Length: 158
Image 1 (spheres, rainbow, N blue to C red):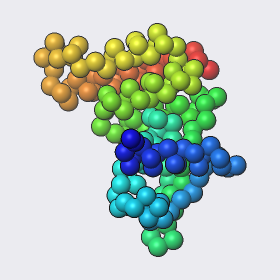
Image 2 (cartoon, one colour; image 1 turned 30 degrees about the vertical axis):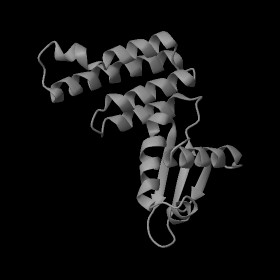
Image 3 (cartoon, rainbow, N blue to C red; image 1 turned 90 degrees about the horizontal axis):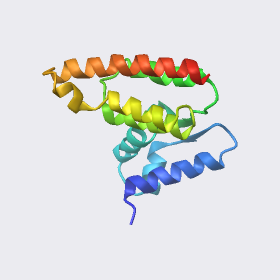
């Protein structure tokens, strides 16, 4: 039986699929009421299941008349992918999120399975552990190597 997070994700994806626009607009409070949960559960789903790495862009406006817009990032041009990669620069490097990004790039046929496996090898912690690097140093090195590799792949892909 699917959990609440899965149900909310599935519902939002169905709304996106049925939308004649390239986005959906919802109200957090209304969605929480529909699923009999607290608004923070909606926030969790949006942060974890509708991230840029998974191919979504989420905008929100808070307040009484606030809304949330969820856009599906369309494949087909290099620019959206470059924006996703650039957005990683401002965040703490998290290999789990990067794996999602790599998986999505493969699903969208931006990179091959072989290229996806090579990129995943770059972010394996055990490689960096053998050099005695601190976790912070390892993450910085992973980030630099991955950024360079992705940039080169995008040059070839488009």
